[in-house]
Amino acid sequence: MFAFLYKLFGWKVIGLPPYKVKKAIWVGAPHHSNWDLAISLGARATMQFDISFLAKKQIFQWYSGWLFRALGGLPVDRSKANNLVDNVVQIFQENDSLHLAITPEGTRDDVPVLKRGFYYMALNANVPLILVGFDYPRKAFVIREALYLSGDYQKDMQAFYDFYLTIEGPRKTWLNNYVETGEIPDSR
Image (tube, rainbow, N blue to C red; front, side, top):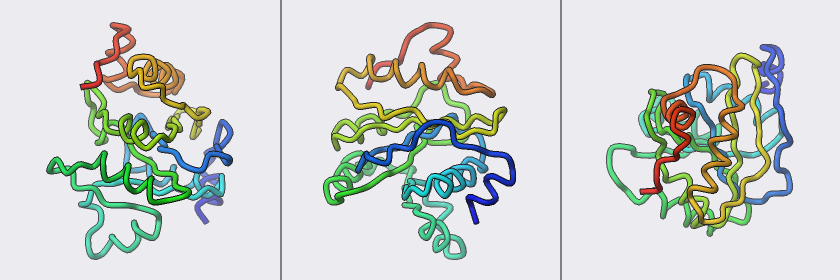
């Protein structure tokens, strides 16, 4: 159903899904709209790929939680520091195969800098990042080949930022700051 609706509304997947990669963190940006989830579910169905996702716990209410869990959602409490990085690393260690999606902004709002947890989740779990862009003008879910992290935050994140410069549509402040200064905020 999701794949049919995805194509009906004119959306497409650009890039090759990483079918041979057993574990990865999918990073979806820029996160502008509630429609990003529907677009992601359509892309996932089109690719026939099993990808879970982290989402704010508020959408997992008694009336909707069952649906978001059935779609692969895992609730996250964003109101307190709760060692999310360590918890996600442990989940990867306990699974032979796992693909997990996350938004590095942590919100649909405009932010000047990205959250960095996704980087450390991937680095500490020794899994690559699969960068995904929501390209609304082209109605495209754009996939970059797996980004294997070196541990050099600046070098790794330059590849990250350079990919997101190729995604059309309104740019958020975190990416505009990179365009204006050429600098990537440090890893702290």
